[in-house]
Length: 132
Image 1: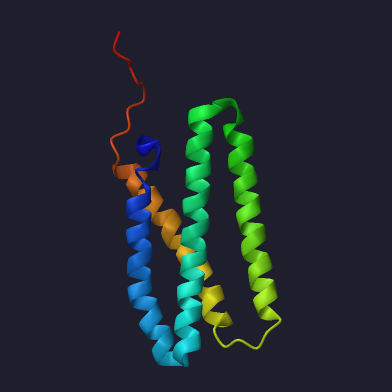
Image 2 (image 1 turned 90 degrees about the vertical axis):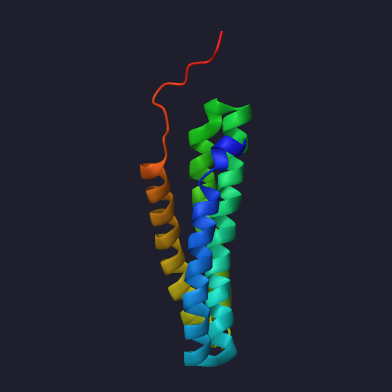
């Protein structure tokens, strides 16, 4: 399982860097609501990608033939849930909503970029030869 989740530290560090930059900026610009919105946006994305990575890793270990349907289902489910959360919050007057939306977008792009950089730098063999 550990082998299938090696990308997580890189992506989570990228989320931390994003929060170190965005949360103080949002707090300076819009106070506590802005900082909480930034934290919630990045946290929501980090949580959803981490959970889907875990689900996909477990599926790869136990039922590889279900990997594509499970991966696509988790993808659709997480973006649906993020949309529902944002829709529910949009019906309130919470001042952190713009930062929540901005950080959901930024965190998604940064997570994908961090994972892509990890893949490009990883020494992943094309063929795994098991010892006999």
